[in-house]
Image (cartoon, rainbow, N blue to C red; front, top):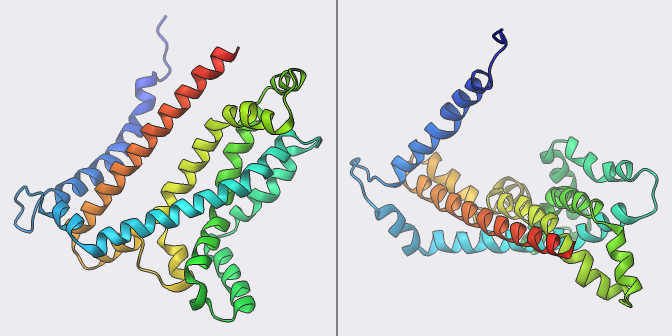
Length: 265
């Protein structure tokens, strides 16, 4: 008797259509403008112009510095919080976790505006601390994205391994650096990826704080606003390549960590 229901291939048709219309075709348009000149001829001049311009290279470096500092601060703040929530003697750990997730339910522009007003009251003039305030607002916006994967990774950590390390004579510092930290690397990599990549292009937060144009997302927007699709597409392709590279590196570290974990067992 034949099954009259939908097959898996049939159920996948809407998703395939969606991917083609809203992912593949836009990417093809971006690639077309990135590798052609104003006359429509195939050219690599757009890429050469990007790396020869001090403005674009400087914007890329500045964006990476902002993203790197944001990621480091988020990691330093999120790891203790996630560890306490995951390993603390709380009966409702996920309820405490919600306190860090709840701000995400509010529109981020409202949150950044409120934080900007607080900083203005404290400092008087934001212009004197533009870089610091930009990093602070980015950390405030992306901190939950670092806490969540760390919490999930630390929750799955086998407590018997920590107890075994203590039984073998390791102190708390040795247990952390030799057992807890290595086994939580997948959560660290996930959190770093979720914070670093958006931080490079999230120009809205910096624009709200001090009207910055020195970040990749803002530069892309300025090119497309001026109908310069060629240079805007080049920057998009460069960021796409960086995302693929970071993703591949993080997957390599995750796979290596999983192999080490298997060998421990």
